[in-house]
Length: 156
Image 1 (tube, rainbow, N blue to C red):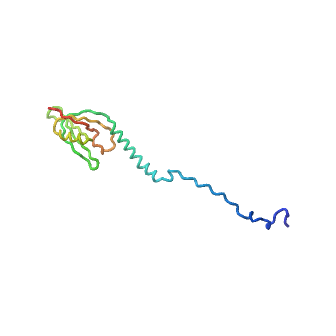
Image 2: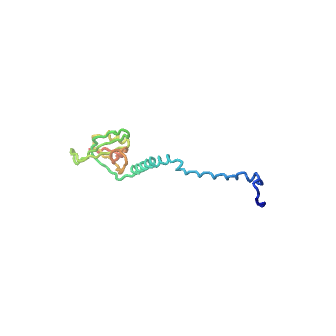
Image 3: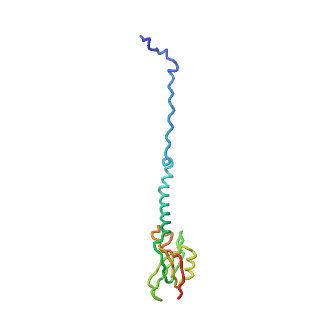
């Protein structure tokens, strides 16, 4: 027997039988920039940062001079060298007395005009003005750390 206070299954309205609407799902959280661009981020970290570091190191090493001075002697040779990075490399033989060679001074020239002036004075007694740049990261700037900035002929 059925309890009259309870509604029978026949008494249910069609609204009660309809499924209750599901609230819309919250939008998915957007992934961070680094997760969306992981390949680019990895390439920048592995390639870009070391390149920037070497460039900064080179700029500081080339702009800061450890020492500067003047050397006198005879220019033995000067030549433009290198496969990719062409630099002017030279050798100056210093002398104690005429005819006695005591030491050789190898140097690099960055300026073409100074290199051509040294070429013109090759074999004569000259004084070269130089700057020493320590810690240059690559030989692309020159084979030595001594960079000649000027030359003058010493009269005999």
